[in-house]
Length: 367
Image 1 (cartoon, one colour):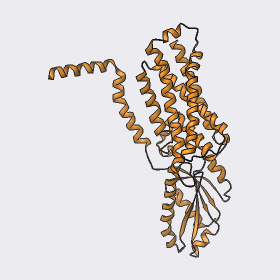
Image 2 (spheres, helix red, strand yellow):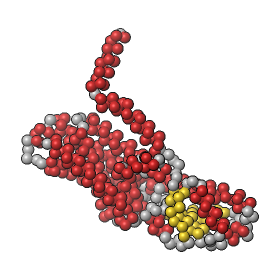
Image 3 (tube, one colour):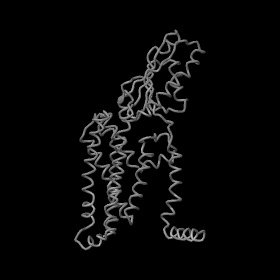
């Protein structure tokens, strides 16, 4: 019995030797997953882009703003006395939060009168906004003993003002991310099985004998999936609005244009994978590994990119969902126009052109 068991084990080892891709998957995938999850997964938020509106100008006001910067959580991106620029700073994402210190703040503290500090938040990311609000309350609480030691007895209370998502409803943040997550996975997997299916059935030889050129085959393979994916995107956003009360404040035309760029990139990615794989099983695994984990972990869908190590942040620049999420939330939740997310659209366009070009080159070789 032992000899037969060992014989089967030796046979399986020899099979693994002949199939280096399986061996690489067994050894490499756990290491990659450990690195990705270990470095990228963090619920801490750092490098929060902070604007300070100091309408008081006293030493007490400067001490308060300095307490935010010295906490290690906030990076100062704007400082002034006029609150009107906050609209643009929060719309285009240059600021994620703002501290508005009112006039007579220092005088009220010195005279023992209660005073409030307005804390403005971008609520389009409810999870991050909740964390940032907790940091703000902690900072204000921590400086209160210092104020009392200096003779200022008046209590300081942060007055939160949340934009784009006043109730901090998690569905308004998560559902747009889920739309991007589902669209990327389904489009890549569906198209990755298209060309490799022809290989498995042996019909690729028949296609080679036809007058088809590569561009015709590529368009014929992707157009049906583009129509299905577009219908799926429209249905998902409609259900998000009906079932989860996710508003669509921006232009449907711009939303459709950005979604089209995102889908084209995913379709090109899927066709490219299908030209590399030899079987539908391999194509499915490659599609799943290259879409699910990167989109979930490295796109900013769940975990803030600003809190990741610098090396991981650089990797996120090749994840198309990162750009789509910024544009999607900007259009859906903020209602902003292309002047605020045109850079994201350009990145999606570059990715789509690159993937479709690679898919074209590989399709030409397969024919």
